[in-house]
Length: 323
View 1 (spheres, rainbow, N blue to C red):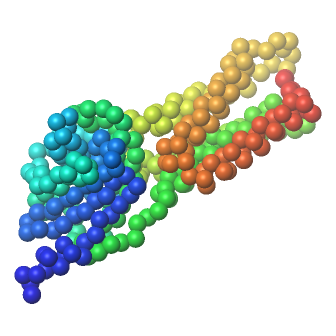
View 2 (view 1 turned 60 degrees about the vertical axis):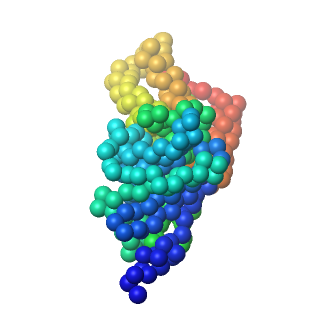
View 3 (view 1 turned 180 degrees about the vertical axis):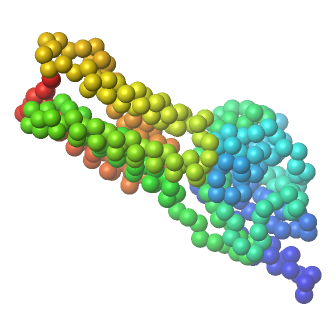
């Protein structure tokens, strides 16, 4: 009966598929046999073992310009890849027409568990270019679950930590800043000295939400600073620190008897507007990166409409107040 166990496991296992990549892993003697299958426009496809890009073992497969299959083993670092590792892997089968490559690796070199559900990550690249040993950053990515005992239910939609990252950033860079700017621009007279407290409190809450949001995504993905979305976010955070310092300086230098607007006030106004537009643009960019889910687009669009109408109302009915 034991002689048939590998055959039973091979029959029981089923491919785990996303919209871009299918992964099948079979246990055969002392090796794991991977089969990666991609869409027709695939330039490379990759699978990694684990839930995070950071330090994950990644296997990248593609066909070169001569239609020959290639597989590279790398260690992921955030969205970047290390130099090629010298793992003893062997390409056993390929089908360029169906964009499928099969390769084997020693079981001793893998953290796959044949008795439990394995968490995998995948990446896909579909831009027209010649893939070399310098692997460009993926155009799509996601996660899969794989079991050697049979098909398992796949997680659907965007990861929970990405959802929380998005919610907190919409709060930090759209809702709270809009309220703070509206107060500073239109409500100074009606609130009196309290406007400054409200303005600073809202921006402090925005900074706290942004830091929490970044911490959540950094913990789950590791180093992501080579991602353009993250890089823009870092620039916004740094300029936000400059803006906070500038606001404190303005408050200390404020002179109720002045008869002109100091340069630091003007810089503070325009830097704030620039940051607001940069942040909203990066939020939209982030929504596009995760596949344009309606549960991000709908509230974001509604908030943008509400914010726009509020400022139109403030401009027409209240008027800007400058002290």
